[in-house]
Image 1 (tube, one colour):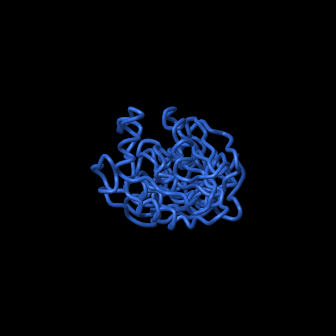
Image 2: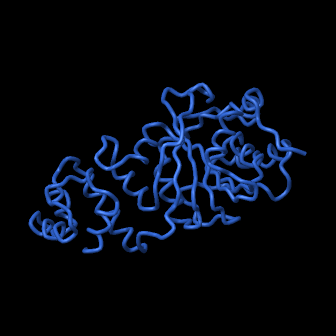
Image 3: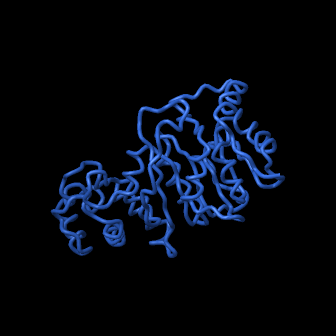
Length: 280
């Protein structure tokens, strides 16, 4: 029996049955267009046999599209009602035993995932998208690649290059794990309810070799936070607190790392920050 997808009418009926009212707090803008969820799966290059983790499956429209492609899915859902219903919906749409595992939990608190997924595919709400992505990349080194749908502002920041207007601390922290790219736009009209912001797909691929160990990551992220805490400040001032306590001492460290003390945080690449962190 082939896997079938949810239609707009069934999504609304499921929401009514579960007494789920889409809320801004949880970012519940449900995708009601089959072509869109298939597009996400296609852009994510999901193949038969892939082990995928999906964060926030909601009523299951994207979940079913991933399963339709022949992958297995570990779905992490914070809403108990949705977590309980998802396996029932999947079974009714032709999903076989063992293909879907639901984890009823807050994604930001998850430290173990059944099935050892290697691909992340998700539709993430604005308020938790960056924390969830960074938590999963830090906690699950087996995640090799992924595509997520996020608000355009978030996606542009994640994929931003040094020196651009949208480049910030999330850009650098995401780049620690590997390159990110904008992978497509998504119409507002495919959501229910229709949001008042644009959405994009953003993809990542983890580097084959990590930039460093956990101690170096923590040091690097602390320096990144300090650099962007006061944008447009020279690094010798912005990093004084974490590089010796004074602008003069910070300048010495920066020069040793090959970074101009008069540069600004938004001009540096992640590897620049790593070189600074190695000297701390």
